Image 1 (cartoon, one colour):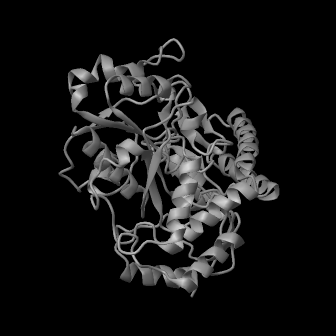
Image 2 (cartoon, helix red, strand yellow):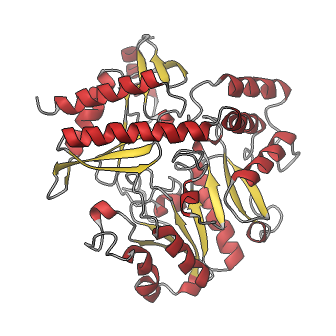
Length: 433
């Protein structure tokens, strides 16, 4: 069937709320290229929302999936465990920046990992409250939807929300919530937790602060280097656990470090991992200090599908690819190329107000005027639409809908990258017509 026929059929079958951002239907994908059912190719700067870091249909991952599927596809790890999950746990323990000794818990999705991190933090500390940052995105379950900042489309109409979730300002330097300028601000956004917020929620009631090192859906908001060390220190001083939500920023998305929080030398009490961990297979994990993770009684955390053997086989292959093909190094080089291209675009187009991010996890924030910094969501949507029509998949984000982000496969070729940047350049030029 062609795209229109599939679209018409979809509209009579699928729930309206289960929306899709693009009108084309995928037939196959390889590396950084997606091909639709009509044979049209698209350079993928979206990566299935940061899921395909090793590229679509990597042959080693596909082989691992096939081999495991031929053996068995499910038993439930809580009923009868299996080697792929244990092997994966060992590998995750080796690469995550949590202080040793540590333990691993496997789940299905990013939201499920975050929700379990909250459960474990509350169990260990015997405290109810959780602190999150403004502009955060942590998922769509009741608890993680509550933790997510943006109302539409994620929260609107779905209340009431979970209790004991509180929000503090984040280090959005381009739009500082305190109206200050870095570095003269002295990182007031981190100090806010103890100077202002502890007056509203007592620190001995707070189980954890959970933060994305580089915010994803919130607009790739990237903190100054002093922010997380200061925030983590405040947590330590008050017995509050610090949880790094690395679901989008992890797996070398920000350059040569496997996890973004490593750029600042911070060791979280727990880390949540998902997305590019298993190259599209539904798998996530919570990795935490042993003392914290093992505080939960047997059977207190779990799930029927968590750590599915086929998904674990895929993840083990992914981690092998990272090592064998030196994906973190490729990520670092890719980030430098994209940053240089984005800086050129900013000099060329006044609509680009800010370039930010780390490694190839980069973003362009669009504004109607650089002085007022008024968000430009309409222009953002126009750029994304034009690019798609020319064969480039782009994803927007941000609380104001005015940020374009790059989360392409880290194995994208130079030719594909140059072509994608050229289309993006054309898309910005089209705004003037």
